[in-house]
Image 1 (cartoon, rainbow over the protein chains, first blue to last red):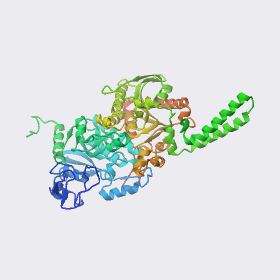
Image 2: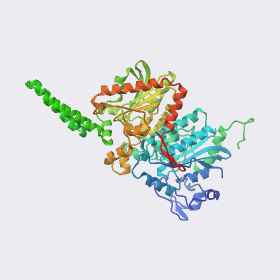
Image 3: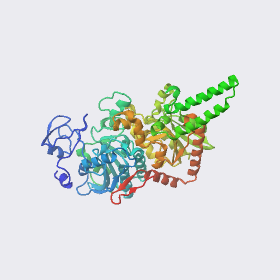
Image 4: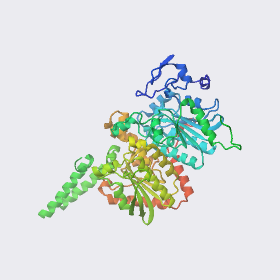
Length: 295
Length: 328
């Protein structure tokens, strides 16, 4: 799949990824070979990238950037970004916040923690918003809330299905109460979309917690999670610290949520585009004669 | 904290007890000390004003969590008539961290939703220290939908450290319960007045906090994260909570300036705990006035205004103009 790199020429050669394990900050070394964090097998770096950063041996999903996800979901050349001119302010004058933003921008090459655009998925036009965890933990401040709301409103206006890939540690502390209010703002917009009969597919990537999970990410007509993604209101660390509850293994993973009836599907990243296309087909206007024949 | 008094209250409490002593002395011994008492009373009034006009955000946090601060049910009983509690989410359990029910406000039937802490340890255990489980939020939504069906306005009272973070809460979908409330409250076809009474703890507060008018008691707080939690993340030390409280901008005055709330409800000098009746009277006046305004608006306009209210929250720039998109 050489198209991935061609599509984003400005991308560095290697994608920075974060494994799911206990030491969440580890990155794959820029070598030819990497050892899978999960199964320990030796993998060819290029092969891992070709495999959408999923270990071909054990199916372990590495953390990937928003750009990487977009390239994997959209039909080539169809993604058109909007609302990329919104810039973070420092409304509270919070200690060291502007520096933190600058550092995140330098590290990720992104202006903020979400990218919004229109695109096609196997020919279906959709509005797509994708969050990036490497930008201050994918936290939601005013800009993220505004961009997500704009995406929802665009889906509403243009009568297109909405897909949001969420990965976030929650609301952004540095914007205080204004971050909290983004939960209300985005959820209100989903409420409008709902009333208008718009389709919203929420995709939960690892990790997706707190303020984002307790707002738009939980409001999909269909909710999909990546395998083993950490999905929660309060993460395991928060629970262990505040309630001192001992947690069973896997208590906050996608499979646990599935078992408890909180999500619809768990989909391997390599199958995500196909699954989204299938779901979009179910919601396309019915055609006389039963529509497109499915093999 | 002896006798439940905060350290910055102590000089005042001491002065007041001295006045009390002099009064007793006058009565018992028949010596006229009225001049001395008057002097001390004047001093006490000055001291009180000086203390409470200059509270730091950290001190206000402690007033908001004052052990004697009136709780939701105390206020409800003083503001409304014939409060009748309705229980349960019809799905799992009756969560006592949230109370709900019917009442009259000057003859207007209303639905009340409130986060309720306990006054003592036993009650706090029953009410989970005011930290709702998902079933609490689902009870709230059930009662709000009921209110919508019968065209009753909804009045909510916020006072929680936050939604309960625990394994069972996760199993039953805490995040989903909050998100669904935010969505439905934003579209509920009856007026909603929200009152922040004490502590507005993040998503757990917001889950009953989407409305047409957001009122906040003078010494209440409302924050995305507790000052302790923020300090632990920022300075790796929860003892910097006072600094965090200032940085997070969580006081009623801050929130008014940020455009998040509509009105500050004054507390009696010294804080709500010094006069619950007066506090309730102030709340009643503000809620009734706002409700009467809202009842004049047709539903379509009401929902448009509610949407616009939250839609404009947030502060950011546009790259080209570099002007702050002013919000609030």
